[in-house]
Length: 120
Image (cartoon, rainbow, N blue to C red; front, side, top):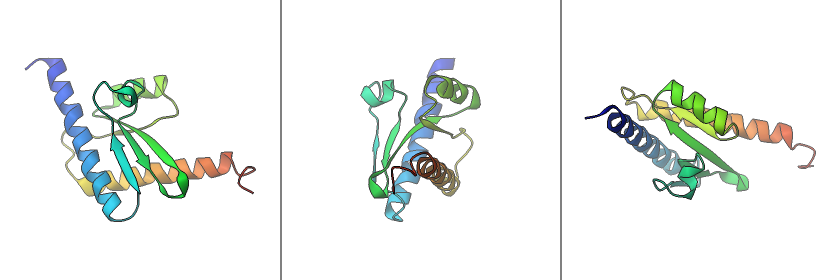
C-alpha cells in the first residue's frame, strides 16, 4: 500500500468516526441533522466534509483531518471552516462527540458576539 493510499484510508476512517459521533449527537438532540459531503462533490472541493444543521437556523461546516499538518493547511485555505483532527488510533466516539460539541459551542459564541447588534 502506497503512502497516499494509506493517507486516504486514514481520512476515510476519520470521517466515518465523525459520522458515527454526529449520528449519536443527533439521537441525543444536540444537532438537527447533518450531511456528509460526497467525495469530490461540491462541498468536498470547498473544504467541507460535513454540513451540520443546528437548532435556531444555524449550521456548522466541518472538515475532518487525520493529522495536524493537513489541518494547518486546511485553516490556511479555509479559515472560516472548522476542522477536527481524528487520528487513526483514536477510537473513542464519545471523545469525538465532546470535541464536536466544543467546536459547536465556540462557533455559536463567536456568532453571538459578532452579530449581537443584529440580534436585538
